[in-house]
Length: 283
Length: 280
Image (cartoon, rainbow over all chains, first blue to last red; front, side):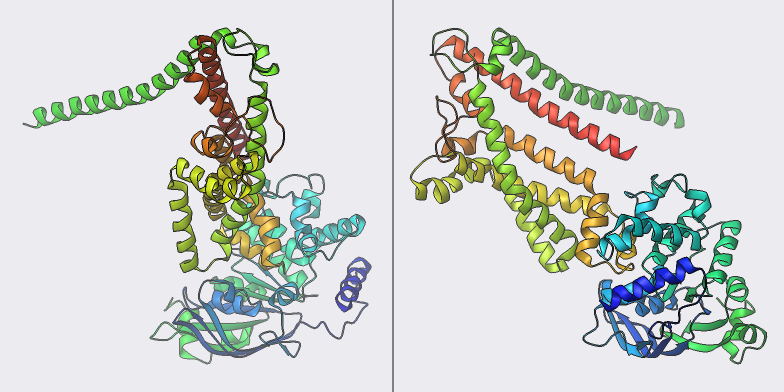
């Protein structure tokens, strides 16, 4: 019931166009405390603590294999779905631990959406059904008119509406790579998350499509908390407000080295390892 | 020296290509021979009466195999109703929900079951259904055919689900969809072509099974009566009529055999058509 109310409020917020509604229980602040993650017996990331502000873009950078992806997969409890995935530590979403015993990971994933490296529209579904999939398959939605409205709003937010409004019944796989990725963003937006995780969302895209996604991220940051993993440092510098640098130690375990405002981290890195990485001497 | 080596390789290449062409041709030739042979022997009975009329007494020309066709359809339908839910669910369990060790054990069991000779399945159905019920019956035959179908459906379902990229599963889960709904809404639709192919192949396989029916369906000369009574079927008719001393019954067996081949061929063509349409 409470959930329904939240959903409805958001629709009002969306169609109203402005931030007229203040939702106290939906801030989208993430606090990560001593997060460690394993694949089987192999430790991947160790003791990461970081506080991610609301309605801003936080970039996670670092060399390949340092555990960036594993880290953000822990933030929506997707890591534990992989075979042998284990997590220790706490992740507080608006003050509540998402790893607490009585928390359903499915409910968490509805509040923390994710966009993947490779555009992954559901190939058997139309563009419309792709965007509506989250609502349909969670049975939160029953009335067609409302579904239509959410699909349109989500596609508009993802800056894709004008390109697809005349072919909503076509397969999502018929779109270009950049459009597919924006479709996936629209699909994530449709379930009204507070936070959107992006795992190298542009690495499969050409520079122009990348630019469009980056513009989109900036506009989404007015309403959503965005966490983006990228190994493109220029991208982190262009779009993010804050940047965290993760690297691995001698044993290949990912550690958080430095975290701060993007301009400061790039212009004035405090740690030698950060400096080596951003100046291209390593990684 | 180099020249001789080259010539030898060239001729060896031609020889092997020739041999494999002959082998491929032999396969097609066999199918054509079987089709032609059954057609030639059964031609006298291949008409509309074959489909619409019931059998005439032995020694009289004419009559059809309507009862046997209906019997076969009932048996295949019953086997499908029994086997598809179990086979499909088992396939889903194997591909997505079983731990690797359990999956390996179940997969091994399914492969062994698929390899059990069909006559053994017939004897088994006789022991667990026919004897307790004190009667040969359509149901017992349905059970026997279902036992043959289940491992085929389960394994092809599993294989098809494995072909759906993991990224689809993760994308669905990341939307806050439960694993079961993600499976039904995203993964299974993505594997539907493969699953349908597996189901069709299993149907085609059991439609032609004879041995299990001897112990279960038994056959009857009066048409369909009840699921609890013996029932006739195409393969059974072929088996009994082919051994008959009457020439007209032998011819009818040939015609029925031709029909059965056409049925299986039809199903195979349907499978190809479905998969081609989906892959376009």
